[in-house]
Image (tube, rainbow, N blue to C red; front, top):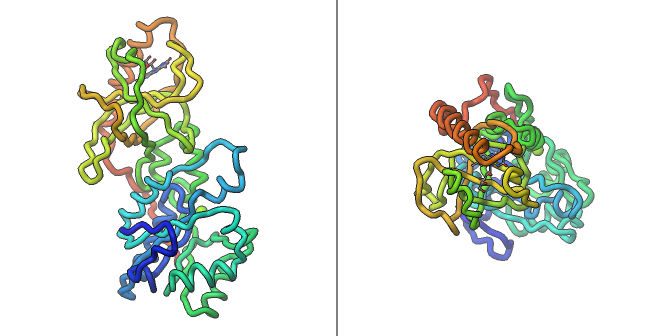
Length: 331
Ligand code: RBF
Ligand code: MG
């Protein structure tokens, strides 16, 4: 998959594509239905398959500073998930107030038609675009008819766990239900980052940890998780199992910022400076203040046992909701 960040860089391999457009935060099963519909059309037409997304997330531009981070997937993870859907190129449209001030008509004419020369655009049923979000699917269809490209919209996709939506995924994660989040997403939710120097206290407890501070993304429920962690080496990423605490470790020193402390089973090497991907598999318990370190140590040993047991019976890929619907598509 090629990644384009500036329309000036677009090469001929991106022209005339079937293009799926959206924020695709999380790349959940609903997003996968949109990109999957585009994939089917691109194969039938023997044209390239492209995805257009916006960075930063429009809500980060307009909600500036006020709200807690809500992002499920920073660009790096989003791009990795989109690449796995056999997409030929990802066009990352820089989203700022200038871009947001384009009218719906201007966006379609200058970006989709003049720069990308799109053949076919695929969007979700609730797609909105242009200044003040004035444009919707009906307007996109009208402009497509005028300017010579086809438009397909994908109807909402509902599974047993409800409508697939980024909001539902966020709610599951902040409530400590990572398994439900994974069912909605179609993949385990991951946080990632560079391993920071921790205090060596974890080793003293008998449970050395690799520490990472997720930045600019949603905070899941604080507490203890069964995890699978990948030492990021692209396709050769090495996956290990472990147990992690997300919190401020009140038993030891209350630290101001939440930190993810990951203890990997049967692993001794130093991970400092390495890039770690951490998949939240199951939630074990809330973080607590213990009377002494011995009590904490006993609890962590029990957490590790619980996590090993859960992980040994949890598949690598989250199970599909039992009533897997197929998306309705309309042109
Ligand atoms: N610290 C706490 O103060 N309360 C906890 O409930 C707690 N649970 C933890 C569970 C696990 C699996 C791990 C790896 C750590 C936990 N910690 C907890 C953090 C612990 O205090 C910390 O790893 C060491 O102090 C080293 O920084
Ligand atoms: Mg949506």
